[in-house]
Image (cartoon, rainbow over all chains, first blue to last red; front, side, top):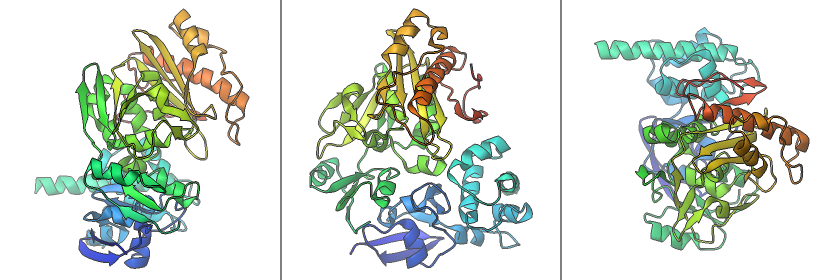
Length: 166
Length: 291
């Protein structure tokens, strides 16, 4: 069977996989990183969003073997880059604004939220809603998720300004 | 999905050789193919990953823009060249799928899939695009041959497409409220040779030109004569989101609104409407509002 080497949350990993193994299966079943959730497995719900070479992707719609040599960041790795609270600013914003109820969609929402902030800076609420087209939440009606992403994006921009000012 | 062999050729020649083997599916961005395999709508014993061999560059050509088959929707949306000379295409790319899909999905993959609600086929037909493959150049009308079918032969790989410059164009789609694919999408290009209108999401066989709308636009370029015009009812898609009569009427409404946008101060703006008009994306050109 083929093997794959990639960097996941700054750690080099090497595993034997099947041709059909999806990135989400690789993360959850081979690496036991179960923070990334598998909802629909057909690229609709966004619960499985991770960052592949710095861009948000649906890990149910990428083969593990396509990621040979790539850098992957999951929700677990985002927390490792967190501040004093141990949380990334986007995660802290989701807690602060109660951007979740059952929490199933949350890893994908947070990973997409950080991707939105990286691409668009501090977008308005209407833009955030448009950008969340591929992330489904069946509990909250999105109001607090949108607030959390707006607040998280502002916190990330503040951090960036602090860094460049220092 | 049954297990399958995965191969990642490092040259286009090697890819062509591997692609010719029976039971092989070609993998570009995978955003259509992988879900289709998961849903068992397609099957394959082997995948040939074209990720390392498809051109991704976007460059000016005489009278047009050539886009490599491996260019992602996100790259096309962000391209300064496309945004300047083909704003309708850049805006279309910006509204394909969702951000994660746009980071992976490619032009070549979208053309080869010829999804019945795909956005690019309508653009290709209205813009008179030429599709380049490892074997030949194919005009768009000859390329799209039916429901999820194209003129591609076994072992033939799309390498890119050349889009003629048409700054006065617009694409409007109404999203299916559940799937968020186009319920109906209409691409209008007001070319020097005359108006060209193509519709996606309506006909069972895929995107198609709409001669009736083009005739009315020739008679009155403002689009006022599109009022009340509907697609002929035969061979239209019917599903839970809309019956044939609804789609036929919707195509007329979208054609008229797209004409207004194409003729307006910011041609190319894409309005995505589901229920109500949506606010503009920050990188869209100025929103001109529904007609």
